[in-house]
Length: 271
Image (tube, rainbow, N blue to C red; front, side, top):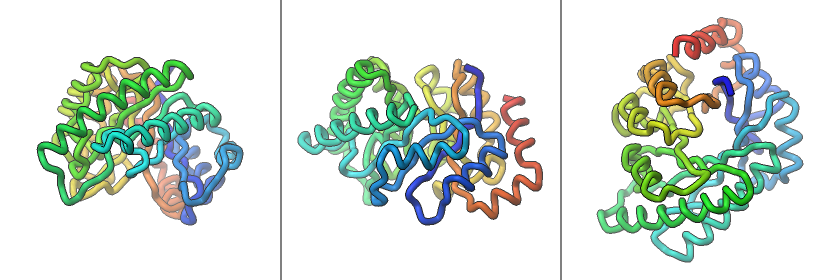
C-alpha cells in the first residue's frame, strides 16, 4: 500500500464539527481517518460511522480509550484484566468502523512519577497484555499498535525498551504506533525511529517545541519531521502517516489558503 496522509477524526467533542473539520483535513491532503471519540458523549458505533462517513475518507484505525480502565500495564492484576477486556472491545469497535488497527497507550500517565519496583511490575504486566491482545487480534483480524508515550508515563516512553519488549513477547498482530511528537519529548526522535525499526505498524505525526505535547503541524515546531519520517520509511514502513493535529477550523482554512497542502505533499515526496 502506498504511503498516505491520514488525520485523526475527533467525534463527540464540542470544539469539533466532524463533517466540516474533516473536510478541511481532506483538502490538506489526508486520505484516511483514525476515529478518536469522546467516551462521555456516549456515541454508538453507527453514530460514529455516520459522522466520519461525510468526509469520504476510509476509517483505517481507532485510537483506543486510555486511562485507568484501559491501562494494559496496571500493576493490579484484576484492573489489568479489565483493561484487556476493554481493549478487546475497542478491537471489535475498530472492525465495525472499518479499521484494522487499534492504537493503545502502554500505561496511564503518572506525572508524580513511579518507583523502580512499580516500573518493573508494569513491564511484566504489559508483556502479559501484549500477548493476550495479540492472540485476540489474530482471532478477529485487528492489530494492536502500542504507542510510545511522553516521559510522564511509567511504561512506553522508551522506544528501544518498547521494541525490545515486543520482540521478546513476539505476539502476533502487535507492533508500535510511533508518535513523533512523543519521541521528541523523550529524547532524539530520529534515534527513536531507528530503535523502533520494523516494529512500526502506524505513525502519529505532529510537531512541538519540546515543552509539551502541543500537536502542531509539521514545520510549526522544532522537530525535523522529514528526517524522522525518512528513517521510519527506510525501516520499511509503507502505511498511513497520520496528522495528529487539533487546529481549529479557522486555522485550517488559513493553511489551506496559504497552500500548506503542497508543503505536506512535499514532505512525503522528500521522505
